[in-house]
Length: 191
Image 1 (tube, rainbow, N blue to C red):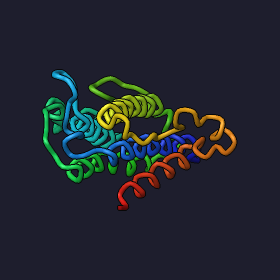
Image 2 (tube, rainbow, N blue to C red):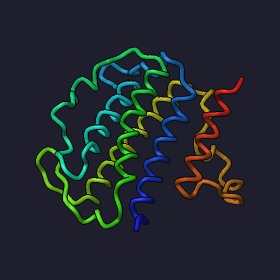
Image 3 (cartoon, rainbow, N blue to C red):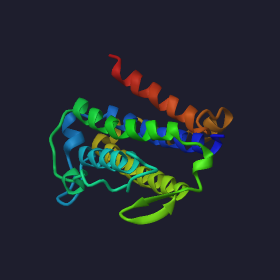
Image 4 (cartoon, one colour):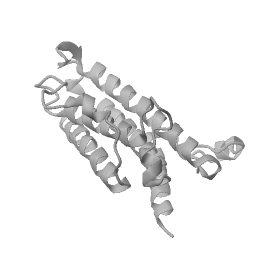
């Protein structure tokens, strides 16, 4: 059975789509701007999320989640990249996550994995990873909104539109919300 694993996968993909819908609105320069002296740019956050997902979910059930090949500190180095480079790096980590989730079933949830030598249940590691991704996606969206200012296209219910949305709610399930966001990304690419 895959009820819980399926729900976790869909929620991860919803956050992925949310970040990508924000990224689609931004220029290369906006993606690489940390917005403050001690801040992280969206590019840095994407590098970090990709590195984290790649490390945590490579050999998820059999090896420690902090791999010796991961260079975590380098993920936070300032970088100037194109949107295409950013999305390629971003996708690398997500590919590992989605592939691994495809191998799991709900019967794995009570098993044990380790992260930095600390044992935890599979379900705890999945929830921890989902919360980690969600927090960074929130940063991406906020940085994008600040960068675009009045030109920002809302990714959820726009201000003053709650009543209209409540008449026809379309994004209450993770998969349908992710699809709606993916559609917005595609429409933003068209002239």
